[in-house]
Length: 148
Image 1: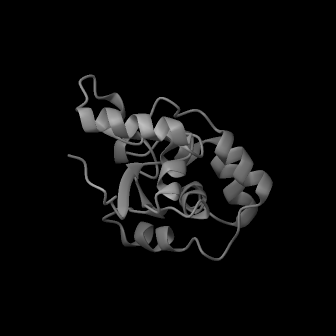
Image 2: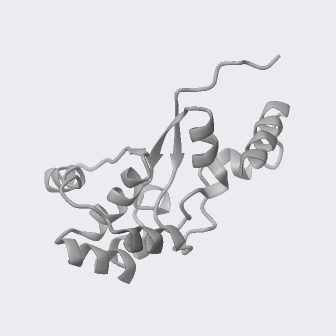
């Protein structure tokens, strides 16, 4: 039998270039009061996407605010009310990752970042690519498609 208790936090891959609501995960989480937490916020499975870290979109927005492209990518995530998990062994990067709360992305900047599709093949969860899903995964995916 299925559980009636939804998770409180769902950690999913989410970054600029995937769209603002990939696979309907944000919409589903909001509807069910689940907090999303983004991992791999710079793309490429944690290695950092060239398009995010050095691409024109994020770097030009960053220059307008005196911030790095990485800071823009993190700010985009938290501006969607999604928490973010970052990692680095470099103290300067750790400090920069936390230094994203002193600027605001404009509506036009958010819209541009939301519409970026250079990573549209990335999925929020490995379960999105499961070729042999369990019955509960099929049911959950069905429920999510109704939400979207």
